[in-house]
Length: 259
Image (tube, rainbow, N blue to C red; front, side, top):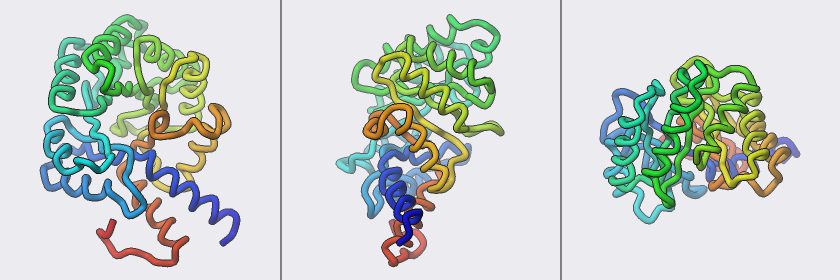
């Protein structure tokens, strides 16, 4: 095995356990979520979490019991509206159904317009609804924020308001995760001095792309920082490439649908 191949294999082994396996399609049904949960238990170990619509939490919890896979659901998604009460109700619903994590879209349009308070107030209120045992992952929608300085500032505001993670994107707009956005967000985490995680979501489809994000995190935060409590990939297509990389290294490819 060449050094490059060995590095990609090591990345694949590492990234599987950092993956939020995601299905947030309008047509999702019980069968789609059941298939997602089956894929989450790979022969190389469990992914970090599944990320789904709130209506599927009970189903996912039952299917993933004792698996080590956490259940995340979205709130204020994908538009990032400014109705704080509605976002809190959605968050409370996720918590009451037994969700482990809430992926909340920050009201980024209002934030861009200068209304930082509504964004901070929503995040703080939703974190209060999460309590100490449910993670709040705040989606900045960095493709709309665009400029690194704005991304850094938005991440800082989210962290100050109580976010447990800051996340790049919904995956529903043209520009999703970028290394430039990731660098700004990781810098905001580092500068805050707080124990906050980072999630790169949208557009990360292969092992090489995952390796670039992990190298960035290792360089900025230290080689032991990017564990499942601090680093996630939000993706639906990445898992197949990671498993394919491991299959190639082992010389024993699996058939379709065999996880």
